Length: 290
Ligand SMILES: Cc1cc2nc3c(=O)[nH]c(=O)nc-3n(C[C@H](O)[C@H](O)[C@H](O)COP(=O)(O)OP(=O)(O)OC[C@H]3O[C@@H](n4cnc5c(N)ncnc54)[C@H](O)[C@@H]3O)c2cc1C
Image (cartoon, rainbow, N blue to C red; front, side, top):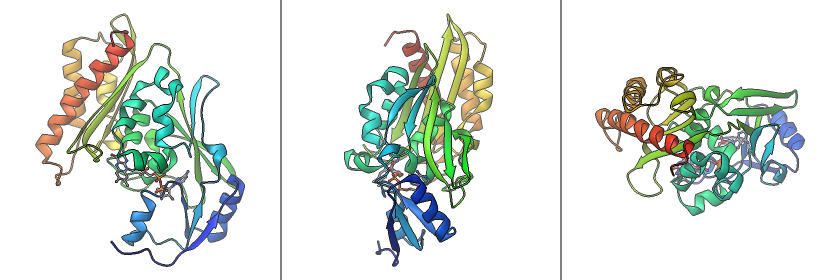
């Protein structure tokens, strides 16, 4: 890999300063958080910003807290913090499932929630999880803030709906009492990107599905979520046959690419199988069986 092209460096000490710097460079700057994706992109000359704006001093964006009935996670929260957070484990075990299989401790020590979402890698795990959970992304610019569902954050591979002068500051997940959730990933070796992965949450009322969300990574599903499968399950009895049909619908919604991680038929098979497993484990957790 080459070294990056010459680039200016600025260190922001507040969100306002970071936003002003983005405005100043008029679309030719990129913020850098953990740097685990941006620096390789710069070394490959896929990204060639005029300036990198370091946002690692924005420690006020590094938090996990309950706020107005939501689980709120700051954009500068590191993977390791998400993995270690008891409050996250209490409400959404799916986040711990996913964090355990994201890369390795070195990447998890530096990589951030905001960087992961903004990188918009089609195989990225947290996007699938937060899409399943119907999380909201809070985005700021010098003009104020806006809220975008995480499901609508990606605008194609490696692209988001953020403009060049916006910063993602927080993700918010509604807390759903009694929800169970789980993430299932197949990787070629420990710490690798997903061959395929599926996350799900369920709220059950007895055997009836009151609420459900499903998110998929590396499977080419539009906006990462097989909505037909979700709609099929909502309001239906959670039976083995219903899980089977939902998994079939999820696999049908997938459109994976053949690559070094496997052919299309194998990935479609994983879409089906991992959806079943994620739904079953989410139900077991919702019903207190595990
Ligand atoms: C060896 C390796 C293995 C990995 N394996 C996995 C894996 O299995 N699963 C997985 O999901 N991920 C994996 N990753 C990615 C990892 O999770 C990174 O942490 C993540 O891609 C980027 O986070 P970052 O904080 O390093 O972002 P950076 O590299 O700093 O930034 C990435 C992009 O997001 C932008 N950005 C960063 N923060 C913000 C913000 N707050 N607002 C707006 N834009 C922002 C940057 O400008 C840049 O364009 C792996 C990475 C490596 C190096």
